[in-house]
Image (cartoon, rainbow, N blue to C red; front, side, top):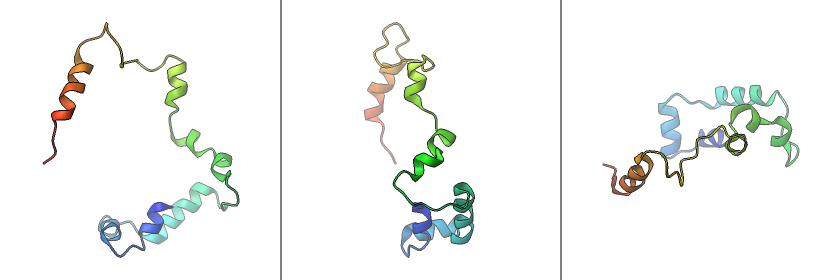
Amino acid sequence: MFLLALTSDKGECGRLLKQHGVARAPLEQAIAAVRGGSSVESAEAEGQRESLKKYCLDLTERARQGKLDPVIGATTRSAAPSRCCSAAPRITRC
């Protein structure tokens, strides 16, 4: 929906979308396809579609199941995580 609103923008965002081929009509068609033709009629519309379950990973649930490798506080692992944490603040963008 945010991208759909930006297609009407006259500023930099709208220009970038047009430059990369994002047009309003195809975007509206894609949104209608994802929604299955239904409109938003309540605050719980997102929960009814279960979009997060379809398109995202629940990292909290994976951690509970032991499927994620714990990195923070790991003392028996290599020193790579601590090196990354110490080097990250020194990295600058050009």
